[in-house]
Structures are given as C-alpha cells and as structure tokens.
Image 1 (cartoon, one colour):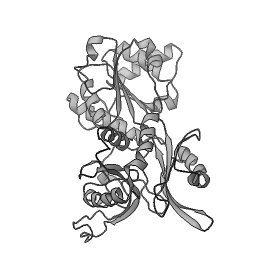
Image 2 (cartoon, one colour; image 1 turned 180 degrees about the horizontal axis):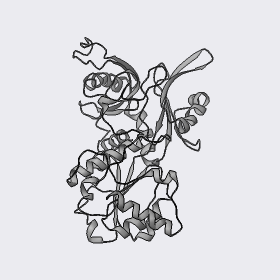
Image 3 (cartoon, rainbow, N blue to C red; image 1 turned 90 degrees about the horizontal axis):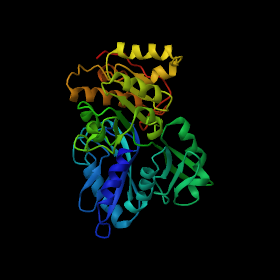
Image 4 (cartoon, one colour; image 1 turned 120 degrees about the vertical axis):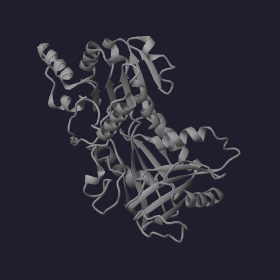
Length: 387
C-alpha cells in the first residue's frame, strides 16, 4: 500500500493540466528481483519519478518507455531480462538473475484505482489486463464483491470469481484467461490496507517508534492519559494524538486485523488494563514493553479475576517486545520493535537471511515471485528474548 499512498500524495501535488504522466507496475517476476509484483512508480514527463520498480537499474529505461506511453496514451508491457551481467538493451550491468515484466500505463488509467484503494483502507482485489489490445483494462472489487472501479464488462465476466478468491488465498499472480478465441493475460492482485500502529504511552522512547513507523508509510496513532505526553511537538509525524482514558481504548480506536498495538507507557497498571481491553480485539500483534516477569504478573492477575487467555491470544502478545538485536538505546529499541511487527505481519521469523535456505521471496509452483502479503494464518516462528 505504501506505493499507492506515495503515488497518490505526489499525484495530488502536480498540476496535470501542465504535465503528463504514467504509472509503471511490476506484473511478473521469474528469478531474482529487488521488487516484487505490485511494486509501482509514478513517472512525470520531465523525468522525475516517485516510488520504484527495482533497486535503480530499471527506472531509467522505464522512464524512456513511459514517454512513449504518454505520447501515444496506450499501455505498454516491457520485459526486462536481467539474467545477464551485461544487458545490451539497457546499457548497464544488472546481474539480478531475473525476468521482470513491467506494465506502463497512462496516469489517467491508474489514478482512479489508486485513489479508491487509498480511500477504502480495507482489503481490495484488482485485475489488470497487461498485454494485447485490451492492455490497461481494470477491475477493482472489495471483499463483498462490490465493484469500486471498472473499465468495462470484460474482466467482470472473466475473472470476478478469481478476484474474490484472492481474499482467501492472499496470493497475487498473473494468469492467462480465455474467452472464445481470445486470450487475455491478467494480473490478479490483492491490495492490503496500510499497516496501523497504535502506541499506548507517549514517553520519550515512543517517539523513535512513531518516526520509524511513519518512514515506512504506516498510519500511526499515539494515545496517553496525560496530555503533556502527547504534545504535537513530540510526535509531529503522527496521524493522530489522542487523550484517552484506559477504559475507553476499545471504544475510541478502530483496531482491525491490520493494527499493531504497542504498550509502552512504563505504567504497570495502565498497560495491564489496556491489555485486558485490546486482547479481545482483532489486532494480530500486541507488544508489551518490559521484562517477561512483568507480563507473567499480569497473566496471574487475570487468572485471579477469572480470565485465562487462550493459546491464540497468547500467540498475538509479544512480551518481551522486539527482535533480539542487542538494542539498548531508544532508537535501537525502536528498530527492534518495528522489525518484529514487520516480521509478524509478513509471517517471517526475523532471523538472518544468510541462514535461510531457498529464495528470499515466496514463489509459486512455477517459480514466479509472489507479492508479499501481510497476516498469513500460519503461526510465526520466533524465539522470545528478554529486555
């Protein structure tokens, strides 16, 4: 979703009466690539761009191809073969060992979908024809099957059922669909909401957590019972600063399956009371700052009150919070916390990639790189650490 919000923000800053533009999207990847399917960038006719489709090796050529798209107002699919160390077509050594298909569309075709996706802030499914005479046709659906944007009836006839299945499979992929004698290559993409972080406690060590989360494009809310702790000067980047008493946190905050809650008030009773409220929410990640014995004490008090947490609830609580990276200072602890949230949302262990056998990115049975999705139902693999 960060690519969508980046493109939307930059699009709105531009006077499109004076400028032309295009949007490039990674559609398919075989082998290795810096970005996965679904990566996007906005390109202006003056040579600027926002977002990325690679580590910098494809953007220059994509800019040249985008000028053709702007001129002709027709979508174009470009295949980049980076398996050779010296790619004569691009004029630079790439060495990524992958084949990458990129769809470049006039900005007018894409922006209605980008706007709808950002405004909806809920899971959506997008189908895009990426080659042939119908290239650029789009269909955007929500989880209830409602059409939010459509270029016509073709995709509704051909892939509506496939799109709805994305909400369960959570796997974006490209496929060839047929109607009569015609074939249409279609990219079926699950678009997920921006991750939402709620910081319960506005202490000085919460500030770098907020800053780092915003640098990733996350939505950040900070709440405290003391208004002095959440002065805008302390959290200028936060989307929301809320003075909220602990008994109302479940009422005053929208906590969904894309929300991470971090309790770091340094006030035992506040953290305990907030935890008791939010453990019944849909938050897949609840982090609790402090040593393990602090959390164990809370559990003991809950049991005395007749509340025994389920295995599923305990699985969602991370205490001690963070990955074991030797963090000591607030900035380092912030890295540890945000990295653990990212790992949890992506269903990764948070370990060293050098010890990871196989490819870094998830792949299909045919070897295609799959778009990274959040919140797999499979349990994470993580060794707890103490702080």
